[in-house]
Structure formats: C-alpha cells, structure tokens
Image (cartoon, rainbow, N blue to C red):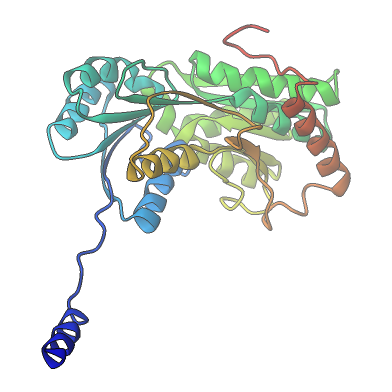
Length: 326
C-alpha cells in the first residue's frame, strides 16, 4: 500500500497544472492609435502590465473613425471578453448605447463619465499636472513667451490649457502664453505636419517652450523644437525620450495605472463600477523627471515645482478648472 501511494505521488509530481487564466480584455483605441506615444500608448502599456502580471489576454482594435466606435464595442461585447475598454472622450456616446445592451459585460471608459452598473469611468485632473509643467515652462523660458498646442478643440483640452496658463502666470505674471488648436475633429489627433506648422508660428513670435496636448500630432512639435533648438513639453506618457535634451518634461497622465488597476480589480473579483477621479494626490497625474531631462531642470526649479505640487495636493493652491470655470 505504501509502495502504491509512493508511485501515485511520483506521478502527480509530473502533472503540469493548468496556468491561471487571467481576465480577457478588449480595447478600442481612438483615432490616435496605440502607437501615438501618448494617451493611447499609455493605455496599452497598462493592459500589457496586466498581461505580464496577471495573465490577462489582451486584444485591441484601432478605430478608423468616430462612426465605428459603437460597432467595435458591440463586436467585442458579443464575444467572451470580461472587460471592454473604451479609450477617449469620443467614445462616450457609443458606450452609453452599448453598455446597457450587455449588462453581463464589464466596461471601462477613460476621459468621459458614463453611468451604469457595469461601467467604470476613469477621469483625470489634467489641470493639476498642466499647472506644474506651466510653472516649469515659465522658469525655463528666456524670452517670457511660451506656447500651448492643443489637438481637438474640446473642453477636455481647454482644461490642459487653463492649468498650464495658471502655472505660467504663477511664476511670471507678465509672461505671454500663445495658444493654438490643430482642429475641431478627431483628425486633429494625428496631424503632425499641422502641429509643426503651428509650432514654427509660435517660435517666430519668440516662444521658447511649447507644451502640446495633441496626441500623435505632438510628433510635429518635437521635430520643430529639434530644428529650432528650443524646448517642448510632452503629454500623457513620459515623452522625455522622444527628443532627449529637447523635452523639458512631460505632463504624465497615468492612464496606464487606471487601466491596470481595473484589470487587477477584475482579476481579484472586485470590479467596482463608478467614477474614479485621479489627480496629483491619487498619483494619477505628475510631471516627468528622468535621465533625459535631468540637466534641463535645476535643483532650484525642482524644489519650486515640488513645493507647488505639495500645495496643490494639500488644497492650499486651487488650480482653475475649465469645467467649473473656477
């Protein structure tokens, strides 16, 4: 009997148990695409972290235009995915239609509030991070003129602009902030030539630091600052690496954290619908420091911006918000 038990135990030791099956995740990216080095890329990075750490299975599609969002979300919802992620404010209307049709499915949308018992909304306090990079821009500028290039002219991007302007004025009330938008349709997120053209126009008016909130179009700004030997500020992801030594910092919007956290909650069986508001205090927003820009930001500049950051977190500084006009 003992001998039989030993043989059975030996056989069991050679059996390969099936690996834990992580959640099945589907992503619908907006027109910028997952390789925009910005907003969509950050979302993709969060999903890939879920794959690496949680065994999540990840599929995605890049929407060719705004009219396709609803059909793409429905197509994923009809399959066996556990979580369907809609990236970008432009998908709001589509998700409002699709989520109620598939109550057994779980959804995440980034940048727009959609109510529902099966929907998580991730919203960011973009104005807070924009305030910090605006302060850095003002400290670094030699001309007293800085720029802002937005992608699509929508309230969300006006929020970036308002925070940036407030940060600039906090440091230098006399500074001039030049503002341009690429367009009023989704095409504005992937038009680098137009961003480059606008950057050259701002540079011709003495702007020497330019912040973009323009998705993949920002590539045009990076090319312009390299050619004209001035500085850019990146957005959403850490874009300091794009043109090392030419990117003062990046306003990091941790979409990667938001995506990963929801995937992780799902894996733990703790999916909780509702709105998640992520700012400096929550670690959802920050400015980027690394080896690519460490020589551009002096210890004095870093000390000052960190003081401002602490004051925003504590509530001592109230950054104006385009949504509330306060």
